[in-house]
Image (cartoon, rainbow, N blue to C red; front, side, top):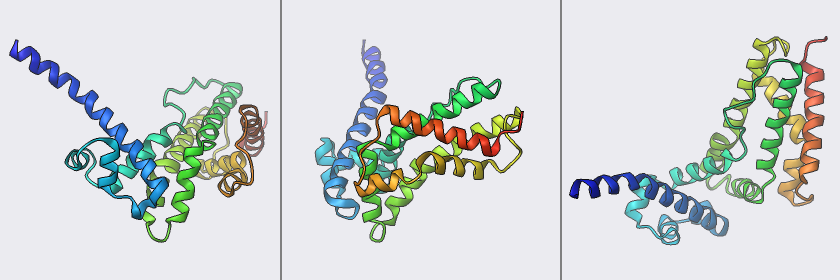
Length: 215
């Protein structure tokens, strides 16, 4: 009986830890929005998350680690899952490229994500580590996922043999245009699902005209 209780307790530990990590990340986001990175204390984050500072540091180690985890969790919503649809021909590649673009734009066009970008810009001089974390956990994984997709398309002769990293930058430029800047400035509304699809379709059109082999 004692062994059974011990085994049951051990089985629930990962779930409890995951819950506490999520609460800490949510609390960190709220504190950052109110006080900025430099003003956000781990004590305040722990208090709002209803955990001890000892537990907070056991799970994350530092405020920077909390920030990185929070951004990684939020940026995960911007990334297409690794289980990409099978690419067989031009049409299936275009469909996958557009799906990728829609998911990235949906993630970007989120008030919480834009708030993080604004905070990173505001804190860039005092706390450059926030911008570094946002770039490392938010932007770079999206670029890497797209590079992987484009490289796979090249192996199937669906794209010309060009630098996939440069091609990825071009696709993102076509996809975003000045949308991110206008959202950061608050001079435009968040796009509707229909507008996101329209922008993505146009970006895929422009990209394939540049990089798809002539048929």
